[in-house]
Amino acid sequence: MSIKRVVVTVFLSGLAACSNETPDHDMKAGVSLSLAQGEVRGIPSPYDDEITVYRGLPYAAAPIDDLRWQPPQAAAGWDGVRVADTFADSCFQLRHTSNFVWRREDFPVSEDCLYLNVWAPDNAKDLPVMVWFHGGAHTSGQGHSLIFDGTSLAQQGVVVVTVNYRLGPFGFLAHPWLSEGSESGASGNYGLMDKIAALGWVRDNALAMGGDPNNVTIFGQSAGSQSVCSLMVSPAAQGLFHKAIGQSAACVNPLSVDDANGHLRGSALVESLGADSLEALQVADADALLSAMVDSDWEAGSRIVIDGDVLREWPSQTYAKGLQSKIPLMLGFLDNEGEQLFPVDDSVTQAGLDGFLSYVAGDLAEELKGEYDAENLRPGQLQHAVSTDIFMAFGMQRWAEYHALAGQSTYLYFMDHVPPAFHLYMPEQPYLSLEDGSRSGGAYHSGDLALVFGSLDKVGYDWTDEDKLVSAQMVTHWTNFAKTGNPNLSGEDAWTPFDDERLSTRVINSEPTTVDGVRKRILEILASRRPL
Image (cartoon, rainbow, N blue to C red; front, top):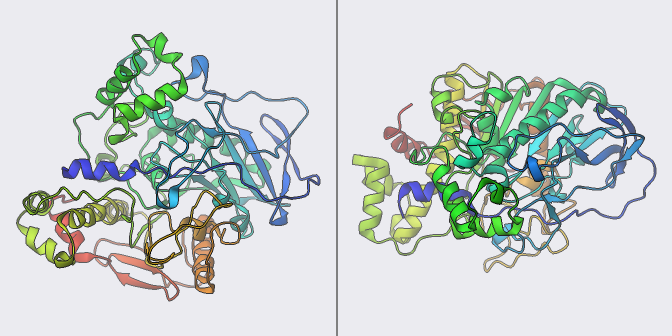
């Protein structure tokens, strides 16, 4: 497998959520708000009566019929009081998949899915707003999974918003027919446009929710983090947010430029579908589109494309010029990101591994190999380890380097705390059997989600006091950053800002510390082939 192929396949695992999980709760009247679209009444959070949750608020019109593969349009208003007590269906995606912690079973899906959810403290006024973009390779997931319940974050004095956005071919298909039929002459990136529309909704309604429209933090994990990274360089998103947090994925890694606008992969999908015109494509069955996505291998390339509109060039080019959003940035990655995230290729031979290492490290290939436990790793396992570091460790530090070099406040973290592995999106069936125990997956990709949201009391099992301590630490860092642009408590400076000399990195575990770089020599070798 080539390095380009290895890099772009990291996002292929499905990180989707399952259903509208929520415990029983009384339905006493919640707080009413007057939004731009009309009056809405929420319900008390099942976990804290002083936090009100507003479920399933439309931020854009349903992207169906003539609006399929169109930029999001304004949502209609309503008369009377809308009772926001039910989460909307998930955006259309594959169901019944099983992969490590990301297993999910059947759940309601719809193309009518452009809804968001809000958690707000009662009597809130001018609070920071945190807008969450879920992960899932841009092909799966939803913002209303129980693991993303916003109660614990809202208890810290912030307003929390979680967003559903179009996925897979519905959100990211690019094709000449679609480009020719659009006002901008571009296609693809509809899922990014949805996020921009959601941020516009937040701007217009923040005050009513008790939030400050001038203090909005976007945060996301995996594909959600890649979206955060991309929105920071999208002209259409500028001014809609004021801080950003990226968890476990950047958008500045080297990718193939052979199909930058996505038309080649889009044409392969349409051919697999059997559509012979734009009209046929517009009315194609939704499940047939998912089948064509799988059959054509469409998702093997970047779902985000360079369309010339939402993104005018590769994000790495914009960052290299220092033209990204001038805002505080916090970002980081976990110790064992590659754990079952994408498969180890056991067909890799020693000769194939040597060629791979030469490609990514040049004359430093042997030194790079020596930085790993090569004697105890099969060729495919070593390639997997290096590829994961290219995608995660290198990508995240390079993002931090770009932002710090632009003179912007930047905080980098590395989590090596090992949480239990469990079915993240199946709270009613959390148990996951691992041969060597629930913590044998290390600090795996997505292992930070429950810790960041403080949802240990809602999902998973086998939690310890140490897990709770680390979660409290992360909730504090994340909400402090949303409030001030600095993750430290007022008057403290334990987590020092990142710069390209010290590489200050906060190590997150039960005994946190700040160090001068993580995996320094590995990243130096990789950077020698990809200088700033």
